Length: 624
Image (cartoon, rainbow, N blue to C red):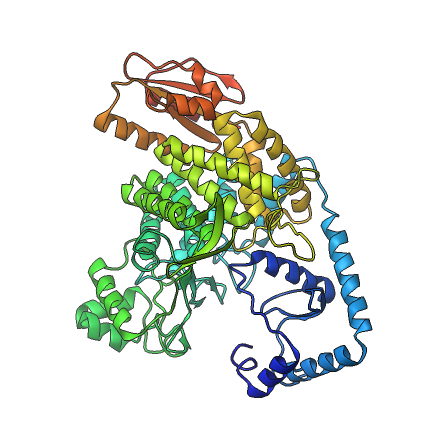
């Protein structure tokens, strides 16, 4: 519509004469997008983008739709005719329009008050697994038919459920999907990173847009798979994802950009496709022929006469490709065509990528990824905090927007992830601050659930909540994770009480279709299954390389053991940690070495002095 309608002089004339036009960036204003999408769904039974809303000057909608062609065709009303008709009715008899706006507003408020809570239980978790199984594509991986979206939190749920319930079939669904996505064209075998989704069932032809949040969540899923299996392929995919992010989506000061467009020079996918002749020209005859054979590059092509490199036909996919060849093709591709970069830096999306980098650094033993997370968190703290509150976005020196639920939840989650990897008490302290602000400004203390925008923010026609985990986990699911981790790490009752109410809200929301709430289900599993808490206390003399290695192992253990939280107490952080997690005051500093205290389901085991003893005990606790 942007090109065919809003750049049409006739339509522009009507709009400029009779309307005040507002274009909403749904990344900066998810609250506006949510409210008016609910209007479209209420009026039409479905929604989608582009979203078209016509409303009164006081923002009360009376007409909604999605796509409209410039002029009527194939039985669909044209935008030009629609605008003229609405304008005439507004001028000649607006009472009916205002009456309709009132009914819509009343309906939305009634719906918002209809939140249903339920008691969390394992049945909804089991039902989600069964429904995932019903929709699983056994041949190609993934779920349902084309188009196929990666939705990494679905895969993380299946991996964790399979471990907790000793169901290899759940793990296999996730692993098969991760392998097939890597083999397909949705993964950029030249430059790394994943595209938005696949237009076909095989993961071959993507919509070539790359988004930060997809790659963050996918890096987390592959890191989880590596931690579970030790299979090198998964580690290499994590490295290729984060290598891409570092090279192409990272600000000089550490923040992460939103993504890259699908189009180059006005043609979708042109940047990514090749002919055999191009490959051989860049790599030489012998290496070029080898690359074409391995990555499915043929004279016929697999996308509009050209080729998307892929490994779907290569059974030796784990060892395919020479790094030198990939590098040459990457450098050639950058010179050949230009990709537009969305260089906004969003707090919420950066929160997910910080989590991914921290998790990958711990699981892969790669300090450079933790460094990426540390720099990005510092960027947010420096550029996107004002007067003790979060902003939404930063671009080219300008930061703006009142932080929404997703910003607070994802940033707090990132701080907790950094704490669990570095054991820096400052990160835990900041997570507590932002979580308290989130609860104060967004939480519905009466019915549970978090609103999308703050209590002191701009008030829209209705204050909505969202619980559905779509392309990105909902702010409510992320907030639940924050509450669960704070309750487990700090032992403070206040977090547990809010978490209990939040989980009842989520349980009510997910009852209709549990697979649509996979991240929320991950949180629920951490509460419904026995928890495990490990406190490590280090003597003042425990320092240097030995201490560094131990902390790295503890960070990895926390990331790869379902339900485990790890807290490290030292002479330096004892006072601060005691204020944040008062129970840690009861653990004395040892005279030498380290002391480990492991509890499970509220039962604590005798102290041990060797980490290997802890690992053995954790293995014994894995039978649920």
